[in-house]
Image (cartoon, rainbow, N blue to C red; front, side):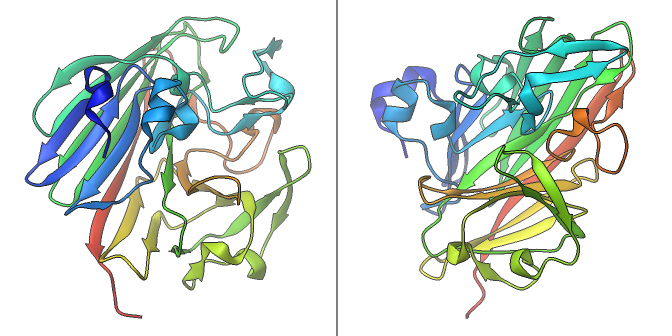
Length: 300
């Protein structure tokens, strides 16, 4: 896992020999998770921590929205909102506000913690909310319970997902989905494909097959990742509030992403259709959960 140099910034959960390192001050991120000595997610490096790079973490929260909002702009309640572009040189806003801000520790035990972020209206997002992550380490399991409370005085878009990275070398991925929104040159969804042979992971497929950054919709909320040279595989299950999954496989990233999320990319700029942004009433919350479970790898 991580060196002792940055332990002042790291909150470590433990359950038997298993451990999970969190960095509340860096986007409420997960820095690493180990089961029986095996890293189940891509582990953050000391360099990523020292440079405050959320993209170098093992996983980070996506709140109040997932992926991109085209041109950092959307209309709500008859008003056009323009957001800070936070992923130059792209013209879009991406991943919400939670992943690069400090979270507060509200509660902590040996194997569980609750992290909280309070957001006030600003250039990055116009509506107030309180986000909460309860992260629990169990026997070969990691459970993330997410909630986002609408503090605005009207119904507003509000959602919560997570953005984990996994070791890419030799990895295989399996899950079922009803379709996939292909990303165009602008980084936004351009075409819904059904069926989708080239991107069909219903049979176990190597992630080395090709680079993608697409949003799968209507997945069955169960996915499996395995590595032939590792003893443990990974099972991912998500609650019904997370019907989409973004899969990002790029050669310039030292891992690949399988992100359970609540809506399709650029959902706020799509006035109708399926998999749009949840709309939450004042004083109500969006809630969702993801469970990661290490399992014995099946023989090839």
